[in-house]
Amino acid sequence: MSLQHGIRANLAQFLHQLLQVLLVGMTIGMMRTVVPALAEDEFDLPRGSFLLLVSFVVAFGVVKAALNLAAGSLSDRYGRRQVLLAGWLAAVPVPWMVWHAPDWSWIIAATVLLGVNQGLTWSMTQTAKLDLGHFQQRGLAIGLNECAGYGGVAAAGIATAILATHYGARDALLVFGYTVIGLALALTLAWVRDTRPWARAETTMQREGATAHARYPTVIRDHPCTREVFAVVSWRDARLAALCQAGLVEKFVDALVWAVLPAYLYARNVPLPEIGWIVAVYGFTWGASQLITGPLSDRIGRQRPNVWGMWICGAGVALIPLADDVAAWSLCAGIVGLGMALLYPNLLAAVADISRPEWRGTAVGTYRFWRDFGYAVGAAGLGLAAQLVGDVTAAFWFVAISMFGSGALLYWLGEETHPGLNPAPTSPRP
Image (cartoon, rainbow, N blue to C red; front, side, top):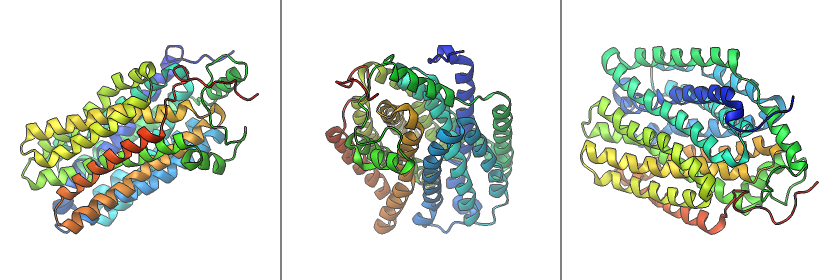
């Protein structure tokens, strides 16, 4: 039986993948409000240690970046479902380590395993949806994926903040974490299918001339090794390199919201549940808006949403230290979330547009390597900026300036990648 592409044709499996990424988002979301806000009170972090505060995000970024790259290559070789399952198994010790943690070093260690989990699982939910969907639905597919994922992040941030207020941080994270991870493992084993056959079917269709011709890189062999794909995506193709640097820099924003914003607000006597809601405005706006911004890029292209998203995000970050109450901080968080919604699904969709199906998993993994390495670079940079100036607001200015500069570079080096709006002038290679 021939396989069909399209969300409607594969709706049941697509919905299973959406539920998976919701749970993936909840797994990281449980670490994004309570842990940084209570770093000093609960986990004995020395007061004013900006670099130590961001150290767990640096560790997360390095590990997740490496696992993104490995996940892409492994999924092309062994299948998407096997890699997804391995990612969930890696998360099993995390809630116990946070519950037992005698000091901040245990939080860093737990975050390393969380990086393994996120690198493997989130990569596979994205790749699977790209496999299942039609090329004209890539923006929609990634938009739905990221909406569910970051909706999970936001929901978990609120839930754990409320639970921690009533039952204590450690017990709340332990129970919440094992509920999410246990459910995810059960659903993966019971219902998730491997989607690699859909990628192979797309390759066959392209060879038969049944799909639009994308502007694939010409500086790569038909059957490249992982090292060759990494080089093409990272620097040999200027368009892909521009997308990678934008992905790296946009993670500065998420590192800021994760590691610095809760502590910044807590130091200004904002109660923990209200911090959870402010951070959730960012997550919910980011997640829900992708239901619009993903499909929008299928109609108007990827380049404009990506560039404008970088600049809007930078503007929202710059406004945060100028605000002075919960309503204003929530508005700023919404602006940042809207900017992320414009760029986040569409940077990845642009990479998928110009990556051949037979090595798309590796290409997406390479982009995600650079994107999530941005956690480490950004967290180190904003922590160093705050440490040198002696004021955490320096971290906000560091991130805002970086976003404006990266958006300008993407505008200069990038191009429209949607194969229907900017197709290749010649037929693909046989």
